[in-house]
Structure formats: C-alpha cells, structure tokens
Image (cartoon, rainbow, N blue to C red):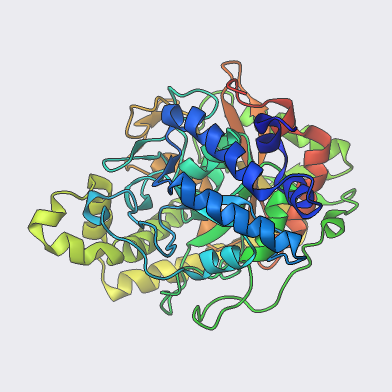
Length: 479
C-alpha cells in the first residue's frame, strides 16, 4: 500500500495518471490529503473553510464508481482542490478575508470554478488571502495569518499566499490564484513553486467584468511547469459572460511543452537602470539563474526600456485606484462597516475618489506609451526577465516593508513595484524558482512574454525547470 505522504508528493499529472489507471483510488487520495492538512495546516494556516470530511470522502467514492464504470470527467477527476477565497464556489463562503463578508456564501460557481469542477476536481475548501486581496502579505482579521512554507516566522506573500503554501507543503496538488500586483508571482517565488500569470483575458473571471481594461487575471499554480500547463488547459478559453475574454485555445499537450530554446534572446531588466531598490542578495540569485539559460543556449543581455519610470509608477497608481476601490464603495459608504475595512483598502477607495475622468484618460495614455516602449524591446528580445520580488520573505508580524536597502517605501505596495511593468500591460508572466539565500529564504524570477505568448513562456520554463529542478531539489524543511 502506498504511504499517504508518497501520494501527496506525486506531481498532479502523475496523480491523475495513477487515478485513471486505478492504481490508487480517489478515496485513498482524499484520505491522504485530508490527513496531511490535519497535520500541517494548523501551523501554517493555508487552507480555510475546509468542508466536512464525510462529505468529501463520499464525493471521492462517487468518483471511484465513475472510473470503475469507465467514465472520467477530465484530468482533474477525483483530485482535491481548494479555491482562493476570492473565487465563488457554490456552497462555500467567499469572504475575501473580511469580517464584513464572513457569512457570504456563494450560490453559483464562477466560470473558473465551474470549469475545474467539470474537469473532475473535488472542492475541499478555500485558500487564505489578504483582506480584499490588497497587499502581498497573507493575513486578515477573519482567518488569521498564513505562514511561509520554508520558515513559519516569515510572510507567505500574497494575495495567493494560502494557495502557494498549500502547494509547497503538499496539501494540494495544484491550485488557482489571481494576480493584479504580483499575487501569483510573489507568493510562488517566496514558496519555491511555479505560477503563470496568463495574458489578461485568457482566463475568464467571476463573470462580473465590465468593459474596462483591467490588470487583474486568474491563473494556475503548481509544483512543476507541466502541472501548471495542464491546469491552464482547463482554465483558459473564451466565455460569452466575460466579454473581454480571449477566444481560441492553446495546445496544452505534454509534448507541446518540448522546444529547442537555443538561440532565444532574453533581456535582463534587473533593477531597471537603478530605478528599483532590492534587498541584498536578490539580484545575485537571479543573475545566477541567468547562467542556466545561457547553458541552455539562450542569449542573455542587459535590457533597459526607453521610458520615464516615474511616469510608469504614477500611471499605475491612478489606474489601480480607479479599479481597486470601486468594488468596495458600498461598504465604505456605511460608517459602521467602514470601520471594519483595512487601512490599505481605505487608501485605494479614497485615492480613487479624488480622481477625475481626465486623470484616468492621461494615465491610460501613459499606459499606451509604456506598451509601445516594451514593444521596441520585444523586437530585440523574445523574453524579458526580472526578479519576482524586491525583498526576501519578511517577518510575518510586519504589515509591509517600510524601506528597501535604505530607500523608504511611500505606500503599502511600493515594495512590490517590480511586478508593475508586466501588470500594467497584461502580459503573460511565468514565475520560476531561482534558489535560496544563505538564510534559506526562497526567491523567484519573472519571465515576461508579449501578448498571446502564454504557451511560449511555458515552453521556456519547462526547459529551465529540466535544467534546475529547484522544487524537487529543495523541498520545505518540514518535508
């Protein structure tokens, strides 16, 4: 009999294959994951609102009966899944980590959840996130603090921090996340896993989009590029309820990840010509990772966009305030409920309230100019690379870093400015692990592709992973 810890260590693709060959049952898999969650989650607090085990085991047995009858719902058939607490899943709370939404229970599935459930997953609960997803540090007054998989005294990152930690500690085989300002990239980099921020529009959201050019996207997370690609295959594709979602499908077969990467040109953005401050050691780790690309035959050169980076940050702040605060206005307008909203959310709402239509128009024009500046770089390079965070995982009791290498941070999110260049344009970005500093703190790097090149960046990531394999080389100390 296969030990439970061996089952939870299998990559998601291997787990699916074994289930479909009936080498292991869905019920045994569910028991293994529930046992691991019971043992590990109390210390790290990655999964919240866990469903009743009796119900989950009953669903697993039903999946076994379907396989016995020769029926499979898809590659996720019988695989446990906890969705981020911002994702609507029928019958589960959707709290966004807020006390104001503690009793909010979804009556329908969002597009993402419906697709993954149709592919056979069993929903076991939710993954923790910062309140309203604001701030790349997962803690909130409703569910508490999620702790880093490699050091529970440190931050897990966010906003998909619960998902990243659950993956790293083998409480989930794959996970979903969302990303506006690094929410897929930062926690993946800080927990030594892989994530894909797809091209905006590639994965439809909660079917409540309006006609505006958002920077937010949902995306897949996993312990390997292959698992991320397989989950992406389920998640992506147009839906009429999401008017800005992209049409067409990409080839997500395992063999389609194979590519000769020799000769690909990679532009190293680094600190953007001295614009971005970094904690000591971050750039060194990423530069070492660049040597792996060179060993694969890629051509790596320094790159610097021809653009005013202060204007880049300013335009981002304007568009973020316009978009991020608007969904919270009803809560803000009620003084009693306003008192229960985190200060960072108040900051976004009140910043947005000060804007005029002209401010948004000017920021959008700057956004277009930034796009054109990067288009020039993409004529020289196939991909652009820079770190996934400017600091290593910090003390979990802090709200956010107040300075980086002596440079004061003037807002709660300035320390994550490194993710803005890609977020502002909705480009696809793959987070890849790059290793650890002498204190054992993980770091990742962003590999940025141009629009619609999601699969190309996965192919490059698969080649890099085969050469480095950080996830298997350096599991969390708990494992």
